[in-house]
Length: 321
Image (cartoon, rainbow, N blue to C red):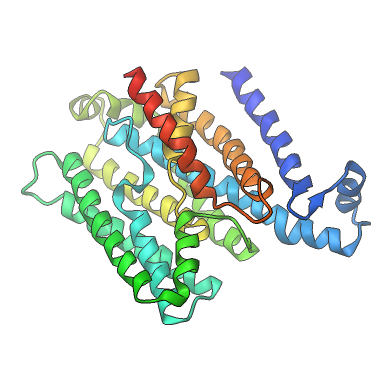
């Protein structure tokens, strides 16, 4: 495990340097990179580095870590290997929030961020309340079904908003497909504290995930208050996912691809799986983003690339089972 952590840490450093030196505007040589570090580079190079590439790299790492760790947590909570961070309807809620802002013609960066975040949290709260009604015996199963129902309804609402606002349609669709284009430091300042404290909560509770995997009765037998922990966990995952979606749009399959890749390497012990998942996600997401911005003359939405990767990965998981 120590060798894996060391390897992933080294890989993070290499990928970070690669993403900072390579981009659609050209390649920074080693000399340019060090001139930027020492503050003697050209103003245009400094602007590209600190105004675009660095915040974009940090956002990709934050979003990757938030979605991957949330997916990992949901898989333990629902004891379902195909559970992912959007199971609570967060993505659909955020999409409605963003679409409303575009339709109203007030689509500033801060308005999109706040609206998507608030609608995402309201959606997850509604799903949780519906799924934990006293009439449902298996509340985990009820939460899953409520999430599917609410997400489907909100997806239909988003489609109607797009239909009735043809002028803003392409902007909403591009946002829904997920992207790190036009990064802003305000987005980093918004999402970084949420990601930091959310990831800490998940890491400190890694042993509890192991207990949940063995069933609720076992978890209660070893002293875990399952109902309270589920409430806190869904709240933290909702915050992590909502903040990620608010700054990047909807990027699917990351919460499945990354945890399962690490699960194949370290097993089911969450004390190893969660740290490995977080470290691998901060390699995976920046690399996918780099591919999205240099593979064509324009820019491919990141969500489209992760969907292309996610489909075959789903089939691989199905084949293994």
